[in-house]
Length: 357
Image 1 (cartoon, rainbow, N blue to C red):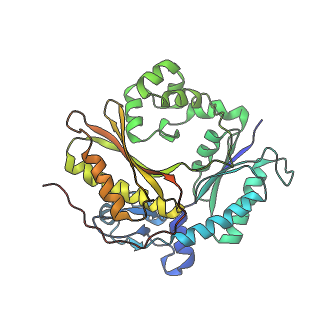
Image 2: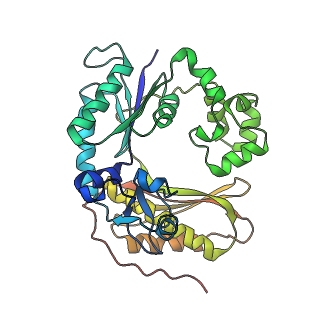
Image 3: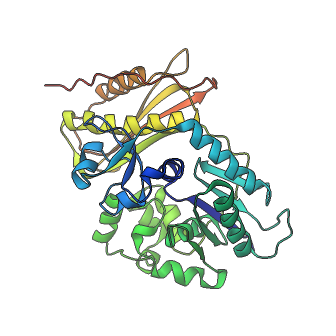
């Protein structure tokens, strides 16, 4: 039986800022920039109580929390702290799969310290992260990645939750469908329309029926409803692309609205590109229509994209090349790939955002 741990840092960027600047502690804080053209990169738990969350337009965040404090991101600092945390993980196991700067899967079935309990390992890692970085992390422990991920989210912040093998299927049956990985607001609403509110409801649907309603994701939903996830923790996984996407609460049909939403997606994608120092030559626009049909548009450039102004202009150009008249849009995403240049991040550029009249 595998023993998998998922570690997720609590409000990572915001917590680093509150650690380094005592005047921000206990106050609602957003990492990002104010203004109608900016988005929140991360929010402290004090800000989250007001409904502020990452990827939210800064203008909306201020409306929800007028006392919100904005601080500019310091990606080099976040990367340095992330490396400290990764070094702790590697003392316990070589099977570490980072998902981003602030979360990773660990397979501790066989571990360097010959410890018999994954729960004890997770608790020890949490303690060391706090001692060595001054930050808190939440941990989930279970027999596979799907369950470990759910467990780490279950008692945030500073939580440790275990889903034991003999409890796994019953636990998933009782789980609200919104807690399933990959089930966002729009998908949850569609599931509710089909009478699916919990894992037990999902389990009543055949795999064929789920694929009919949700495409390829239906295969995953079918297995997850039975607490099955056969994915291995892959320490050698190479990132092939990086970006961001958003599924809209209301399907879009106005081109102006699409450009505005694409801009916010682009800002969030660019923050991840800078945080991971991942600069690629290929830019891809992904669009999913209301009938779940997916189309992509890509363009490859001679050099890696190092400037947000260029990234945004080309993203907007890709959107203009798509025929948006026939169908409403439920999801958009922007990604860069074909990474072959580990160049340092560019300096911030001023941006002019032109909307069609």
